[in-house]
Image 1 (cartoon, one colour):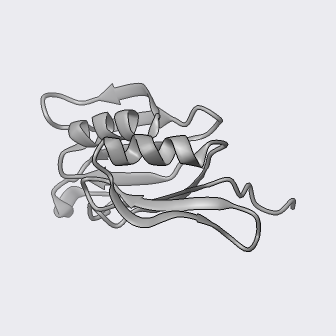
Image 2: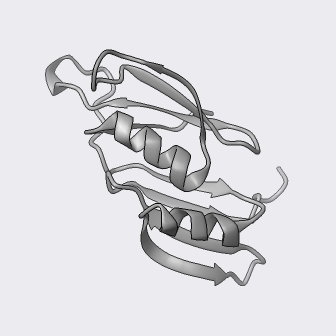
Length: 125
């Protein structure tokens, strides 16, 4: 599964996601400020795809910047929280221990997207 999002300044968002959260840039296609397609890997597995917002008339994937939200599993939420805050992420929810055993926090990136990080890996299927 590849969650996807759009950005008004995709290149700046890529830099932020790498610096603040630790994503790894795999590929970025596009000219100048425009990003047609980018893939970022999440070190423990998985990743996201993103690109620049496009003119709505010819867009096959008309997502508005700032409407994306994701929950991402991390083994060290305390260190990641510090890294995100130090990089300028807007805190929506401070580090919290949940009643189901997860340690979570929520931040917004510069485009307004919500990123929830925690130790909860989901229930076995």
